Length: 104
Image (cartoon, rainbow, N blue to C red; front, side, top):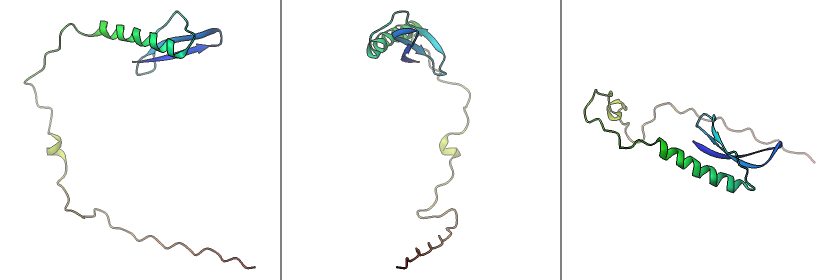
């Protein structure tokens, strides 16, 4: 989630707005602030309070056993190529035409 400061022409002053990662508004301040910095600071405090309330009371249990999640990256990655190996043939670049000479 993210805190932004907003101001609209019909309501002078700055308010903080908390939005989620998809851009949807979660909460907006009812009070107005004289500066962007003050609005964002108060919104950040509110966001911290929201995050504390959402945290679980104890740490989640870790799974020590379970089904396989498939091959590891090492098993899937291709074999390394020898140093200097080229996978595609290089085509020569055609030379540039000479610039036209100007007559005086």
